[in-house]
Structures are given as structure tokens and as C-alpha cells.
Length: 328
Image (cartoon, rainbow, N blue to C red; front, side):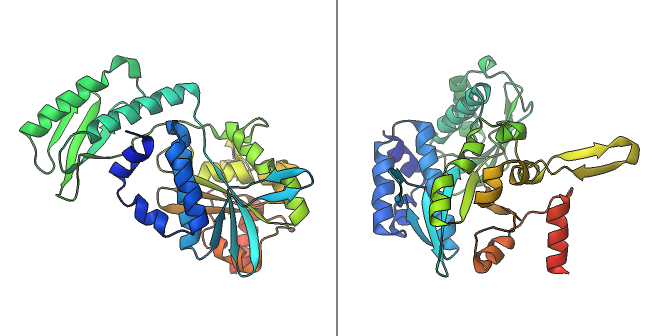
């Protein structure tokens, strides 16, 4: 079974989703999904599709991988979005885990796949009693086998079991709409240190700087899109500090502030080129506007994204004051 066939089995609405997008982009997505054999790269393509859907559902015209000529170079940002006469380029970023995190991610993925092969029409919630554990101590096949036996013996709503003293399972829904057991829960515990996002060699920073020549040549706004479907060790506040500045605690004053060392201030190209960062965690969207006075976004699009602006409980002074003045 190919990765695409396996994904379609668990997401039967994929064809319907693809039919909603323009023909040119649809053909590109289908071609990429069919030929991809690496699971991580396949997930990246699915994330790109989710990015397309987000902007399309927000009323933008969306074009997948439009080519731009800059001198002798041919550059293809992930998306060009258009609204009210303005184009902007969008690049999708995946927050890559460390080698250790990849091992944990692989364990959880294999466990989830094993559970979803069980032919029970239900949703199973899973919790880890010890959130950070040694994957080598557990055998996935044994866990899935024990779970299958339990489902045969105790298949009723709210039934619970704990396996290997660490994996707590509960049946939270039983319905004929499911073709197999589905998994629900805070399933992925990857830690992504926000400091790694800001390092000069990080993929995130390279994405901020990637289209410098294109942006200058065409004078286009640039939005970075990040989609997270799991708890990845970075939340809305941590992204806030990454872009605007670190949180600082002054013990003697019992006071906390944000330093102006975020990427919108400390990274010259990020400051001048990136109009904003859009972070999607699950179904919640948070926007991080670049308040640089030469931001290239039109007022209409800027106002629309501004409705999603995230204001931290520990605000950066510039962001806070601009928000207060605008609303006050």
C-alpha cells in the first residue's frame, strides 16, 4: 500500500478536498502525493495542502508553486495568494525535531498505525502516564495485541485500560461511521526548543531569508505559514517570544518583560521582508505581525490577519503599545 493509499484510507475526504482547488494546483498536488515514498516528505505535502485550504477558505485566490524569474534564477515559493488586487508569497515551514525526537515520533506513529489497523468502529483516547519515556523499553506489537484482546472483552463506551504501566486507553466514541479504530489524544511530545528556531543555521531562519531577492525585485509581501497538528513543544507564547523577543524575569522587582531580540528586530532580512508569521495549532490560528513601518501588506489584508494577532500575557512593548493605540 502506498503512502497516498494509506492516507486516503484514513482520510476518505481527500479527493473531495482536492476537487475544491484549481485544476493546475490540483494536478501538482496529486503528482507529488503519488510519487512521494518518504513519510516525512509526504506529511510535508499534506501540510502544504492544508495551507492552500486555509487561505482558500479565507477568500484568497491561491496558486501553488508559481514561478518567478529573478535574473538567471527561477524561484518557486510554495504559494502566491491574491486578494483585493495584491499578491503575496507564502512559504510553509515544518518545525523539524531532533534525532532523539524523531525516534519518539516514529514510535508514536507506529503505535498509532497499529491501533488504526484494528477493525473496531470506535475512537480510542490515549494518554501517556509518563510523558517522557524510553521507547526501547516497549514493544509496539505486544501493546497492540493486548489492546485488541481488551477491545474484544470490554467494547463499550468509557471503557478504560492501562498497559505497560504507561499507556492509558479509553473508548470515547463508538459509531458505525468509523471503518477502523481511530486514535485521539495529545499524541506527539516532540520538544522544539524556541532558541533553535532563532539560530543562524535554523531552517526557520533560512525560510525567513530565502526569498530576499524575489521580494526586493517584485516588492511582494511575504508570509510564513506554520501548521502544527500536535503538541510540539512550542506554543503561541513561545512563537511570540521567537518573533518579538524573550521573556525576562527581574526577581528583585518581581517583574517580567520582553527584550527586543526577536527575529522581527534582530534579523535584518526578517525585519525588512517578512510581513508576518501565521501559526496554526490544531484548528486555532495565531498571527504575528511584523510592525516594521515598511510592511508591504495592504491595509485590507493586514486588517484581516490582524484579527488573529496573538498578544502574549507577557507582551513586547512595541506590539502592546501599537495594539492599545489602534484599539483605543
